[in-house]
Length: 256
Image 1 (cartoon, rainbow, N blue to C red):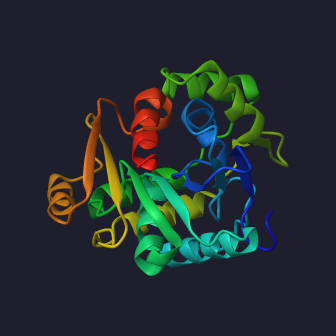
Image 2 (image 1 turned 180 degrees about the vertical axis):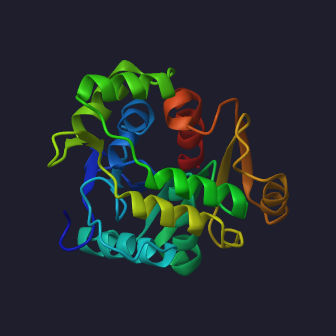
């Protein structure tokens, strides 16, 4: 934990240019390990666990404004005046709102299949599903369920999930490290009216072509606003399904 803010993992070169990488729902900072190792090893990547997930505070509120405040406070504690900001899914929504609130703190903004402007019905169903969080008899059962859900995930990635994102509860069942209510709240936040990145911050939006998360209308509005757009042939889980293709695009944008 960084002060009273967020738990942060750091990857790459501590002397390198700073990047803050924000995960999505059902996630934690460790999800960025593989992309950093493969493509950003000479950057210093700070990967916080969002409030309500991982090893950060689990207490409410879980609004976009609170998540932004948490990350800005964490940046202040770490002495990070300006960073490249990288967000996936709900983490991209958080990153987008941070860049709008404090554009001077963001050098470049990268949005990986951003979950903004979701339909109300779909968001409500996803929130309801989140409240019925699964539990497992043991880590082996959790592993089998994870691999069934994400068969393209690397063996190393699965090992990391089991080691760092699974915890045994008081009833001796095993659960992933997230507060179900915080996930449900996140889906409500993702159903807000979508907003565009600030014009003063160079932005890349990476769309997963086999995902329906980014609406065509939002993509068109981003292009009109001068946002750079790139496609990756993938489902929504870019970090698990296409880490190499995604990493190459991220690296190219940050090198400019």
